[in-house]
Image (cartoon, helix red, strand yellow):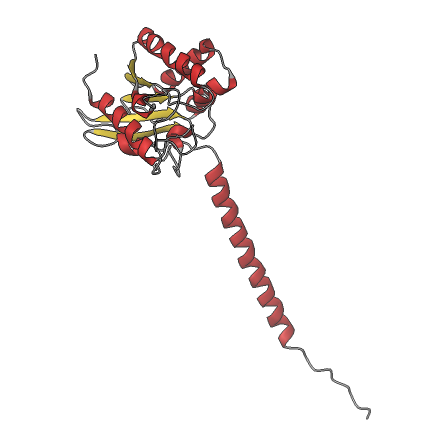
Length: 242
């Protein structure tokens, strides 16, 4: 009888293959998780539902740009950072209830987003609008801004609307001053309130610029500036409407 040659079975190959496949699966899961987190952080912030305000409670929503959103993980989810004035506007009976704000947003962006994703009905009774800085930079006419602001207020549907002056901006002093001079009359025509909340941010000797230590780039308030702005807005919110 001839000899039968038997090749040894490579038992290790299937195990190594399984390990490689498992490692690839883990890597794919990690990539998917990172991609999910990236998309979550770069996508639009959809307001989360807030409980209806109780009797006598002041629940405010916001519409804004980077001056409101600066340093915040998710304004719409009511998570604000150290450089957001919203952090300092809360307390004393004023509760933050969401809204929308994003870096670089114009009043048109705010109007479009809030038309699609307004705060839950009955979740807010006051809307705070601090908007227009990016419109000024782009040269958007006041008439266009006016229509956008009216759309924002209509989408939120809060019975009380408080419009704030915008902070100074290096290189745009005259345009910013003109916008802030126009806003009070426009707000009054709509039956809204006006507050010059940015007054405390202006340099006493040069009102077109931030005071010392109140901005880190000539556009956005520093944490100290955000405290000044937020405190002024809270005072306006808690004051008896005129």
